[in-house]
Length: 568
Ligand code: AMP
Image (cartoon, rainbow, N blue to C red; front, side):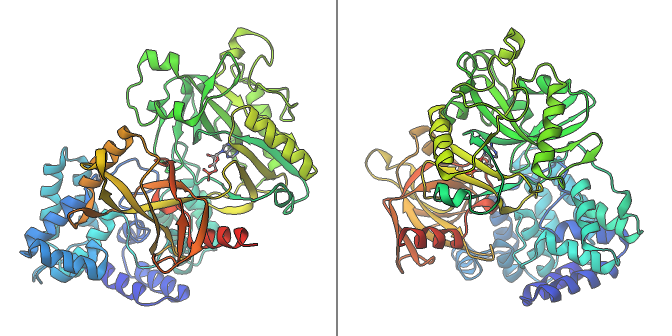
């Protein structure tokens, strides 16, 4: 573990990507295959391989207490150190005492992580973490804490680890990327690469793949400016879901790659009968079955995050899965195929499935209702899985018309997609564009919470929030808002912030940067009040975005784009 920590220090010390990947490649080659495999996972900022559902569930507060106890430092000293570093791992590295004796191996650390994950309850977990950190050198502890908190902060992303693997084992980057995507396990990718067997990596179903993302556009003209042939779909206001179907089983994953099947027990059955194994991409929405259209996001919200769904809820708030893409079918990954071809594969796949409502192909006529009465029989009216209708637009006028129709159906706006484009997981490009009602909203991360006034005096209701810098290394505060959430949401957030405080300043708490909010505002000004250099006028919280991880929040570049567009 000491060697890995030393390598991490060297990686942090250079900004040059080529040097970083060189250090990782040399380090991996100097280890046994087992050690290199585990190290690659840690270097990607993960505790366990991506496909595994195991999590540690060790909170920041608990780590803070362990570091305090083992270092003998008081709260004020630790807070001062935290202010200097802004990172609990670095604090641990500074304040923990040196120790002699045997250093830990990465394999021991990995095994201990498994014990922590298996332990039940915060106290049992904390005891194992304490023991692990007490056996580590300060430098080892620094990186163990960083791995536990899920952020190494050494400017290394999984994509750079992939490059390093290609360099270390003389493979091409494309081979490494494909194997890692199929397996969802960068450790296993190291093993195959070291044996020259990357080509043998096989798709592991039921591990979520990255999803393709969309870029916002500000006008209908812009919507047709990037590609010649556009497919247009409604933008449904629900939650993104990736469905994996194999051998009569279907499971659903969120955009943060969490499994969400339990929250939607009516969906798996509707897909389990597909004639082939498949990975589908779509949106889960609350659905008005008699009327045949989506209900507002606020209705769906009652269904989110539940482990047990009552019969009453199933009846009162039914959901539907609106499918708009296919990533894997017929035993093959189809992400490289152009959208028009994937659309055809998807139509065929769903047409073979009797329970799926569709519209006789992906080209739909404009219609107020969707996913209704396609064939007029009762079974289809009850369909839970609906092929999202696809429209075509050749002029800004047609696009405006479709936008108005989508809003009439209660949907958020439009998605405009390049028919010639491949499915690029995890990337936000110009192949998918989103046209929304509210032109300027930012997805931001809460960095601090304050107690409110009046009836909100006992709850943390005022939030300072931030966007990422261009490299996504650092959060830059951009504003503060205190309206928009319901009392129940504020109560829930208050508890979360109390449990995830990194610095208690009395009336204000600096919190773990994990909560994502969507904020709207009237306009934006340049200002030195916040680190970002911008301030928002009349910011308001549109909603919590529990479906997004902090990593997915907007960057300063997006803020600059909005600023520049509004000042045209
Ligand atoms: P946003 O969440 O505002 O970044 O907008 C992108 C999201 O819109 C996607 O991640 C999907 O969850 C959602 N969405 C709704 N309808 C569609 C659609 N037809 N195609 C793609 N994404 C959609």
